[in-house]
Image 1 (spheres, rainbow, N blue to C red):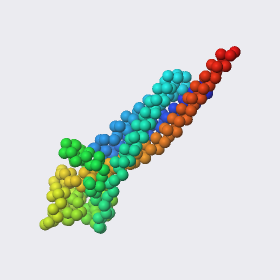
Image 2: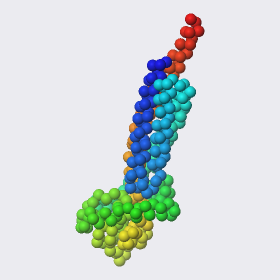
Image 3: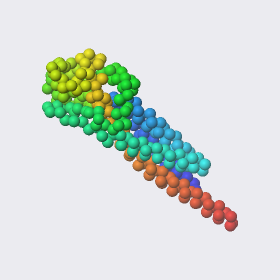
Image 4: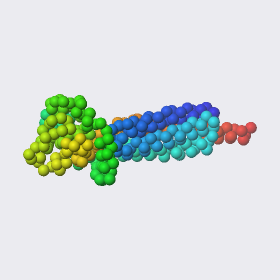
Length: 269
């Protein structure tokens, strides 16, 4: 029994370590440009990581100090948390399946279309209330002004690998035919093609294309990239937690079996 309990404790110490990448993934999301303004995924990830840490700690204590009730709580709670983590991984994978950028002639950066993204993600930016908050966050950053310092010539700018948010929010869409002056100041064409985004562009440095659907699409494209990066960490951690849980479950069953045999032998001595 003691040996099995020590194994359970050691295994749960590994589970404690596995909770750290989950918490770290949530904290990392809070530092990324899109997630810092949209604020959807990071807190569920952080909370789930903290809960896994606490439950694994309970299993660690229950194993080394031989507290069967605490181990039972661990087994039930950890199973629930693993299922929740699996649901989160599947959800993130499903909502980030779509959203690839489009190549434009003579441009190194991609253009993004809002309709290319999943319906659930589109709803996060289509509400005027939600977008106003995101827009204020974007305008408070130095994302667009920094482009003016990095690119002086038109060809240098066209050859730049801009982030989706830079491409969508800081310049007019390429299809509108605006003439480059600097990355955030463009001369309007005589005919902008009737596209709504073309008329929403403003040379006001506090406005630029923050009202454009292209900007919303750029935010979702960056969000998609960040979520897929975090989801990779969650998938690897989930696999580790499942393995640790299965080993711990077998160790717990062995410990209970050893205990029953010990009581059985004592009954006949």
